[in-house]
Structure formats: C-alpha cells, structure tokens
Length: 201
Image 1 (cartoon, rainbow, N blue to C red):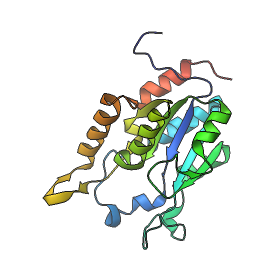
Image 2 (cartoon, rainbow, N blue to C red):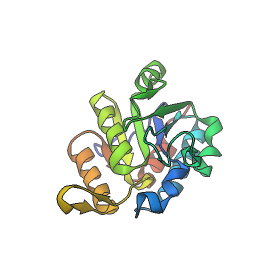
Image 3 (tube, one colour):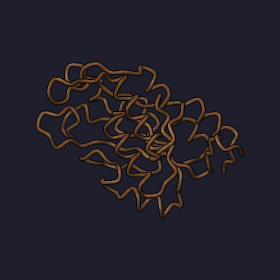
Image 4 (tube, rainbow, N blue to C red):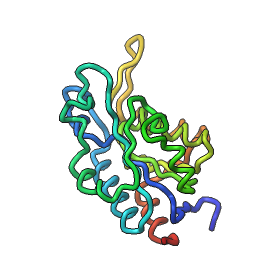
C-alpha cells in the first residue's frame, strides 16, 4: 500500500451523524451547501451494509426550546433514506451536544469493545457535530477519514458582523481536520473505491 492509499479495514465503522428531517427546514437554518451529501451518505451506508461493516447512527436530541431537532418535534426523525437503512445499523447513539462521544450509549466504549480503530465520519453539520466528533476521535487515537462531500452545513453569522458561507465553513473544517492532524479529509468516491477493494468478512 502506498503512503497515500486509503485503508478500509473489515471492521472500519461508518458514523452517520444527525441526518435528521429537521435540517430540511431552510427557514430555521438558512442556506446550505453540497446538495449531493445525502446521496453520498446513502452510497456509503449501502457499501458498508453490503460488506458487513459496522454502521453507527447518531441522532441529536436538542434541549433548546423550539428546536426542530427536539425529541418531540417531527424534525427529530431520521431522513427517510437513513430510516430505510436503519435496521442494519450496529448502534444508535443519542446525544444532546456536538460530540458523538458524549452520548448514550457510550460510543468510545462500544468501539473499543468491538475492536474498531478506524472511523469514517459523515453527516450534518460539517463544521459542528461532524468536525467536533472527528476532532475528538483523533484525540482518542482513532484513525479517522472524513469524506467531506458526505457532509453539509449552513451559512453562519459570528461576532461583529462576521459571517461565513456554508462552503467557506466546510473548507475551514477540511483545513482544521486535515491540516491539524485530527483526520484525513477525502472524497466519497475515494472511500468507496478503497472499500470495494479491501478485505471484507
């Protein structure tokens, strides 16, 4: 294997983070990027399930009043393409914060008990829960791949009139994760190609 080759082990886990209907509410979130995200996530889920590799679903249960991701809101539900594939998931984690490692059940404990050391992290939002989870996974010693085109986010306003578009935020996440050594940022096609040629159970 060359230095730049992607390795997908038989037990590499696919994390699908917060792909919930509430994120379809443009009046709540604003403009998004990457309309191909859902299709790429679905392709990765299919590839993982066909090969018998573990898929972990993560769902956000917001504690903020009026949130479209609150457990009592219809937006809490997974998007249909995830729900359709939910039956084959190895684990469902529910969280109330950005990191998937602070949820129930304990993701880190489950991964360690399962012998998983490599993660492919996908989902919503790129610069929020995806980036936070990938950073923490890197800190915990996992080998992390982030196919950026299997994520998406929204325009965001910051302090003193500063704002960034969703595309700018995604680019910043790529630099933060890859340049900072937390994860390797790749494409869905690269991951699928590597998964197709890897040894599977």
